[in-house]
Image 1: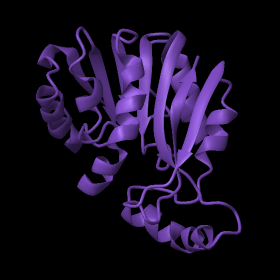
Image 2: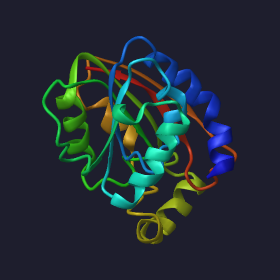
Image 3: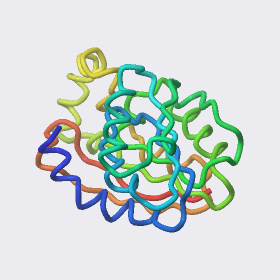
Image 4: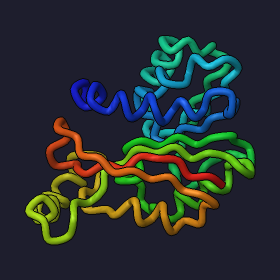
Amino acid sequence: MKSYEAEIAGYKSELFANLRGKAERVVEIGIGTGPNLRYYGGDKGVQVFGVDPNKKMEKYAKSSAIAAGLPVQNFKFIQAVGEALPLADASADAVVGTLVLCSVGDVNLTLKEVKRVLKPGGLYLFVEHVAAKEGSSLRFIQSILNPLQQTVADGCHLTRETGKHISEAGFSNLKLSLTFLSNALLINPHIYGIAYK
């Protein structure tokens, strides 16, 4: 993932700059080891709720939070899934999700939960891989490998049309861009952007 993170860093820097001065309470779904914390964890006064179904990720995410300059008391790991966020309605200024909607059990329910926990005008920042164009050779390969990918990569679906799900989730405004990454052979293309509640 190091080469992937190096290539996506520019996109993430641009995207997460939108949090500065706008988000004090940030929920990151699928926080994993916390690779995104370096982009926003050091912002003054930010409080992060890192949500992940895998409890083993807690120590890694906490370590990343500390490395990013986030005070320990401003980071809380929550073992949960995106479809059932144990947070109050309208309690977050922003929700972050990168490479997470490919592996949730229910994309639409997860997006509904994202909207529920966001305050009015709140931001949902995302970076996701999506299915290749229908009829392309890459889409054909993704379709063949999709069952194996789900088994070996924590339920990750190569053929999810995540951009369509986000577009149809009912956000008040959406800025979505598409890119291809050379270090992500089968998990291309990628979408990234911001959705506003």
